[in-house]
Length: 380
Image (cartoon, rainbow, N blue to C red; front, side):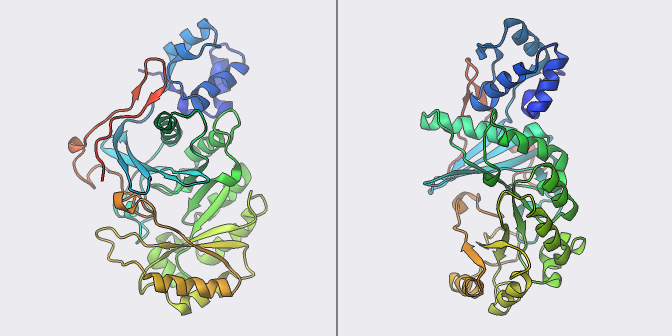
């Protein structure tokens, strides 16, 4: 009943746990590799651990994934999983395959308290922060189920973006240990350049992340001035653009990349005029080393917003590019399964359909301890 889920430990935490069991710290490294590199969930499978340690682990610990409620596969290969996090709440993670990488979009909260107008997650409200193990369980399940799917022992997920449900920096205590596991050579061994935290602009926590675990940073900007951003990103009222840009410049001192990515969701008739593009140039050029990522808005019920036309997006981009700002237009992926940017909604108690109506498909574990994909309950 009180067994500890080992997915919740970074390597230092796992070493301390092993010491509590009377074991040497190097045992933690062995155990860590079995869990994260090999996807083992059965202690008996961990052949290089002493039998006495395996017995202690069976008594004091377990390795448990989140139950999978559903899996959807897009026509473009994008996969979205809905995970049950208990008490009527569920969160979503999305895998985006590309020729040169495999990116997993991970959730940090059930719901979100920021309430950005263009984001489906924000419209459902906030339920709770995820624990470290719940953040890592999304990566653990996705990585090892994808290996089974592809019949490969090679790494499937090369990039992780904390761009799923929730504001990661408002769940800082759980986020940082999870990031450390992603980066650890004995864990997933990801480069700091390939792990991205996306924030709506929690200025004090941007400064803390710079000192504690600097990874790539993406900032949801979405407007060239404070009055408009106040409407689109309510957090701007607490941390206005000038303060946000100052924190971005401070972050660059230790960032693994020499630029900050600014995300800008293109909303028809709201923030997409050539004049607003010029205003954005004046705001950013020469002020902060950055890259602009223009994101086509992905509609959802109740938003009251529309996607900018391609012509309007390209005209906006042209103004930025001519001014010397590095600019890309994000390709929409997984929108046929509501897995595109801004569409992740999951399920939160009392804010979506009743929990008892969920179609459950719990994760299964092979008798030898390897993750087996749960049965798919729906497809587009």
